[in-house]
Image (tube, rainbow, N blue to C red; front, side, top):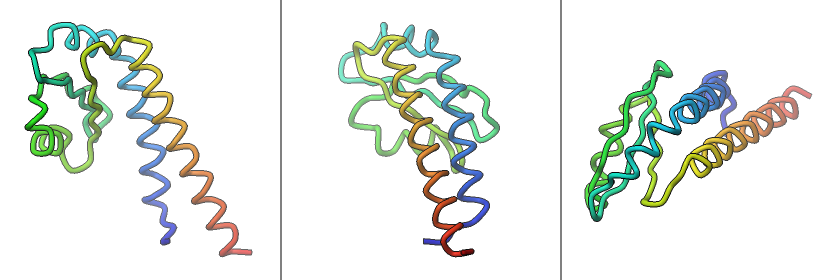
Amino acid sequence: MEISPERLEKSHRTIRAAAVFADHADVIVAKVLDLPREHVVVAVVTQNHEFGGVHHVARGELVERVPALEGPSGWAMVFSPGADADHVTSRTAEMVALAEKRIVMLQRIAARREG
C-alpha cells in the first residue's frame, strides 16, 4: 500500500465533509420527510467542503446519479425513508471514525517503513 500525503489529506478532508453533512442534518431530514415512493435522499458536499444540496433520487437510478451528483472529488450520503436527525449525525460520526482509523493506520504503516 502506497502511503502518500494525498491519502492522508483525503482522510482529513473526509472528516471536514462529515461536519458539513452534520451541520445540515435538519435540511437533509426535511427532504426525507417528503420522499416520493421508491426514492431515497442523496445529500452532497462539494470538493470545496460546501453543502451541495439534497436530492430525491429513484432507487433504480442510484448507480448513475450518485457519482454525477458528488463529482470527482465530492462526497454523497444516501438516506432512506425514516431517517431522522439522530440518524444523520450518527452516520456522520461513523464517517469521522472511519477516516480517523484510516489516518492512524496510514501513519503506523509510514512509521514502520521509516523505522
